Length: 242
Ligand code: C5P
Image (tube, rainbow, N blue to C red; front, top):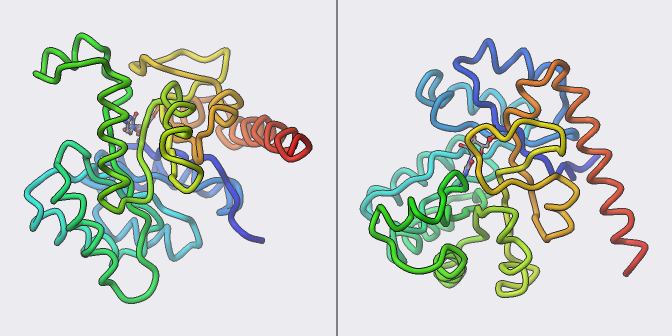
């Protein structure tokens, strides 16, 4: 069976043992897996290789942001881990994004998808101004997303609230990966601009990054199943209407 999963589960666990308690309850057809800073710093590249070898699509979410040469080298190292997707910060600039993409294209075999982080979904408009970025949040996100695509990236990470506009601006070939997803009844945590899974898919998200609503639920595998059903319904209705 091909891996059609739209949900990328954020494995924001302290260590491999805790992460594996969840991973052992799901299959690569149910979800993709995201390894972020917490787990990567704790367990290193071996655990990434382990999950890829088990057949999971792994999104290595380390949000590289450094000089172009360093980021390109880090991308080559990440590609060697057989990851499905990885990311850089768009604020690193065009040259950094271009060199990152070129570094991956020069790899033999399957190059990972490369996406750009526009503005973190935990940010509120006043925080953006505090760090010296001027202008409206949506304009800023749009400008960064366009730069990412012009630099050759496969897509961007964005808030689901930006997905509909970005889908229009960037077309259907650009991946929109959206964190900040919360099923209707769940606590928002530190995410500010949140949306339900069904609504995010309808808005044009390609993949949904979901962490705590799944990993901290009483029965994570069952919560994932429920979310997958909700998404399948939306996609089914979409197919019927085309
Ligand atoms: O627990 P929650 O569903 O909020 O997890 C969201 C995940 O998405 C976290 O791993 C976080 O690091 C990540 N993320 C995000 N905003 C971005 C990029 C990644 O929340 N812009």
